[in-house]
Image (cartoon, rainbow, N blue to C red; front, side, top):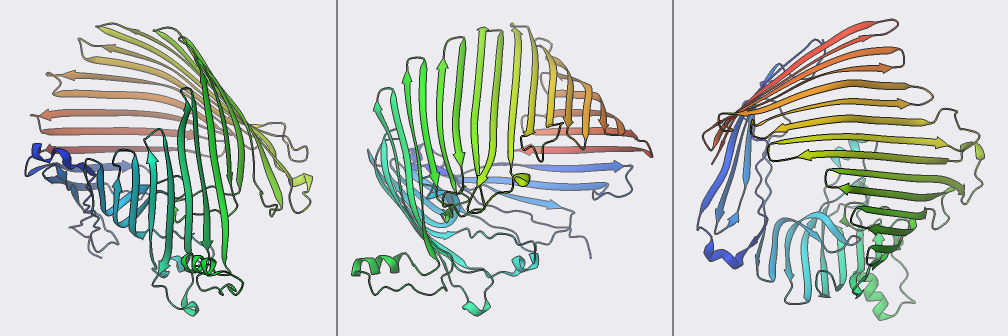
Length: 552
């Protein structure tokens, strides 16, 4: 197969929200963008590698604008082969004028977390917010999601391309911090083949939700979101018996496309926050029914209920925030086992003077399984505690000429098995720490940094430790036209019976050719010498990249 010399990797047209109220102040036509050429070199001592010794890429970014409305696009050219035979096009625009906003083409909408939230659609929409009136409406084709099957993965490559279309509407009243919204979403699969020839069933979804946020008093804030979702798993399933339904109920069943595969799931998410000068108190409750879905969102964790209490104090030099809560699944008692969690967290911040600060945090997640609809064998019961501790002190000595910064960071993560049948004497734990010193000479436009890193991971089966220093230097020359960044480090890695010595070095050079052109050179070298009980080997590689760029 001949190498594809001319490859258009991506042509995209995306226009973000444009405010048309200042259109008279904008240029009738303008264009901006840039181009970049990269040449890469890679050499390794490995006999098997997927990277080519030489590669190159040319990219062009152009953003023409008409009265301030921008239409950016990009084109790339590379020597690499690809399976794509056609370029990819995408167009979207969201012009706005005062309290009116349109969404046309490929856009994203967010009405609430459990109805429509960030899912891409292709269509049209409008948002109106005159004074305190809140209205939104979108209609179009939505992204259809499928689960990848590992048993017959080839089936997913030739699945039916249904057209998933629908609408979402929002109406409400209020401002950003005080509002009440009602959201209705109806999305379903269209143009699907007969039942005998399909592998993925066509589906439908109707969601009715509510989202509110209020300041009850000056120091009291309440926010809640609730929704009910009617999800039809198979539009080919048998129809429900509507003989005993009223005319209204029958029309509602037809509108929501209910059949024998349909089910109803709800969600409630509410929180109340209260402040008392420097103190604050928060309560949060969340419940998501098993199987809750919305075709207007990417994913929602279902079969989940949690309670959370948050306490905090924020002073001038010291602050503390803590929380404790419980969570569980198996809300309908349909699982073989129920998982219960106890959640605790603690965050501390201390700054006695401007030059010194201390941050610390602790989190503990305890997970314990109990019996569900069937008895649970103690030998396979999950009973674990996961802990994380982090401590970060920092010292900053800064004046007009020099800056000295000393930073320490230590993080501990551990998991303890409390089941007496499966526990081990050695818990799974990791320790990561480093100390770093930075020096900046502002008149000389140079800086030096030095750090030492240590990490260890220990379990019953393995133990890995890493220790080593790294030194870096940077400086600017010729009135910031030329900059140099370089660094080198050595690390000793011990993994069970294998010890490795790793040395690495890097070099970055940048030269500005006028105001709009630049040259960059990046160079990285790495040497890994490993010696075990039965083998020893050395792996070297070098990677470099030369870049020329132009902005216009």
